[in-house]
Length: 324
Image (cartoon, rainbow, N blue to C red):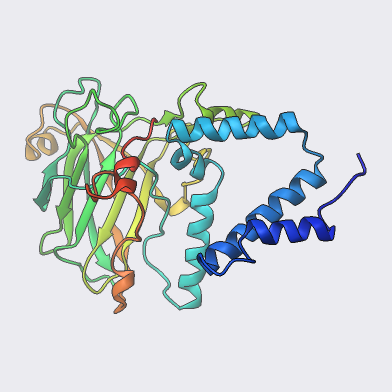
């Protein structure tokens, strides 16, 4: 079809009205963003000759994504989370905040309020009989190699079936979620289990979108981190376990070469006894480097709705309803 109406005065005036440009109230930034969003969508409809059937199918899919609380799952799948990281990397580079452990996406499955420990914590509740014992350890340092004592290391990951506690109601509260403060040498240690990778729910709205693009919705085995300390830039990151078939084919685009860590099998009897374990285990060593900063706003994680982070806030409550 050759009909194009986007650039006509009637349509341009219409977009201005939609964005509230002819109204005194409202938020100016919201108006500008809505004007751009509606303009881009109208132009897309014009350029691709989008039919009414296609448009309403898309609306139906958006309704389904909202109903299933899956926009937080689709967001990394469409690259938005990684794009935001790329922008923040560029912002840091421009400000000459270089070095340190690379950031990568947070994902939608953090839950605030995990139990705290000094130096060492056991993360699993022992109920996952299929779980392979993992000894997770490392040192938090600044970019000059100095240990950062009492750094706050928040860790969360899936169980052997790819499920996260709180969202997976079969698991105990805060299973595989802990906050560990580093010791005087900047070290943290956790006993846990090797997590499994997982995929988006089969047939769910996110799966429908990805399959329409010829893509899968699989994630490799990975472990999430928040790391913070006074005078240092907050770090949001995650490690992928080497050897997983999806390590370099992550639908969420979270893999970074520096964050691929091996899980080394250990069957030495002395090493097992030293850790008071019952048998062989896999050791994962992840050392972390933090950039120094005096800027208070860089020392804390950015604000976003997170499960249980603010029980009085509706957005925080909604963040806990994701179906993954």
